[in-house]
Length: 299
Image 1 (cartoon, rainbow, N blue to C red):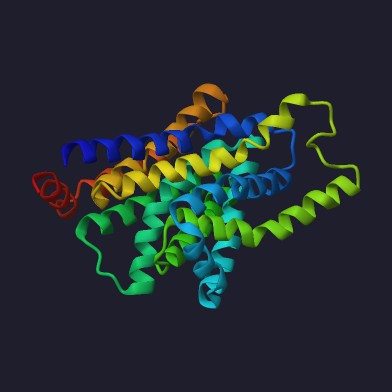
Image 2: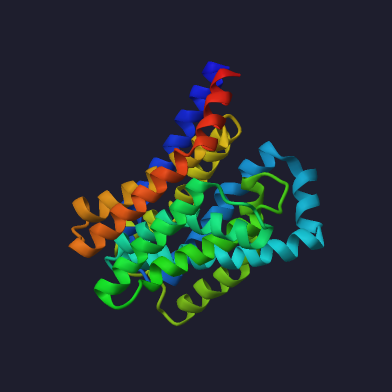
């Protein structure tokens, strides 16, 4: 049991570390238009996920998923939402706005708690209410200081929040779900790449920037590997532990933006982040979550 938990902790943590360091990959593609990067990410994700899903789930399970009309309708919506989330993040990194993306991912779990209250009438614990209040305060600091709130942060929060809401209703493996979503987006992505090629605008294999010719196809592995690691860890860890680990990714994105990419962190933005961080600490260390973690460890 202990070895199983340790393996789950290691793989889940590694998944979040890879997600947190992903700006270092996408900054290599800053000369490529965000929509072309997104199209490559969809294309190569299908290439990377298809053999993996066939091996783990089998042809029969994939056939069931890909021919179920209800699943297809739901997955089409989630496909649009995750594509919107991906292209927003890609643009943020290439435009030197990774801090705004990091803020969006910090706010994701808070927005999901809010959606749970609205959509499922879930009752909030005291720590969840405090967390929501601190998040609102942190956002207010940014609005007052800058006169507006980043559309990048908002779009990342809203797209992934509703994506998570839809995924809650699906009952099959996350990698199969992502394969279906990328397959549904693939015709549009392929057409877009063909159109750019036809207009002599395609960056891949046509600009003389040789490193892009192999870096772009790696987007499939950049997408698939963390997902597989996360799925392995999620099966072996309690939700409370996963909830704590998920803040590794935006924290690393924050550090990468400041230390590596040299983005500016003014006092208002720092204060906003600190307030939201405090809210997240309250969220993950509330009595009920602590009780869940202790029970899981002792069992």
